[in-house]
Image (tube, rainbow, N blue to C red):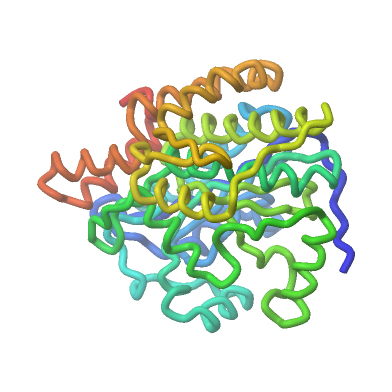
Length: 379
């Protein structure tokens, strides 16, 4: 199976931001995505070109265009938040984003009426119905198809950094799970989700998709739901490991980190170097540690088994990658990583709110809604 890889300008960026719809008074999830999307239709009845639905009717997804800068991509989706609010505000509905809803129950949620989602639920049953998860997806343009797999493999070393920074799902169905990112554990239960297989080149990726297609596991490459995957249609690598983030500042900082990592590796390949990669068993262990402990995780850094607290390695990488960020024009956004480290990741902030409110999870939802409206700096 030959898979074409679209032409894409190097290190361009696109962002997908999934937002949950919640009742302003109770914090409960509300299944009105169809109503929101209908309200956003054009005068001719055409759907909004960038705002779409997702698996569950309690979610809308905002999709940026292709941008050269992180600032441009973030401004794009933030503008879409304003458009959605023109529909939701009069209806008493708030927007929130986190990896999970603190107390929502799967059996109360409605599935979007699309054939692909019905097939998913039919196949995965209880696990599929439990996919009450929200995330961000970041696409980075790759100008040469031969770079895709080496960069993808290299990015797995930094997956725990991204997962810890974005971790925002400590609660699940009203329970404190003890995990910073319970979403990471839930999502990988789907048959084609989770960590990618280590492949040696693009031909190996084509063989993998061929095997999955002829056996009926997937209908097309979009059903390969890896934490990091090639996106041939757009000519990008797509990073999907991150929990949903509740503020534009966090979105910008994490997107800038991803853009810088990809550009850094791309430059190393240009210079004839190889991109180091971890053993798959270290990658798997790192994912679990970041999911469990978030920014307190001790992670494995290299093939020799060197270990370090993830927060310390993030600070080291801020120094290493700042020149790359300056070259890409995203240094202010990249510096926002320090804001996350200082204010705490979302899972930490949610736990603090719950503790201060005698365990009230509706209070956590209210805090998430306020963060999305006012930003992390304002708080």
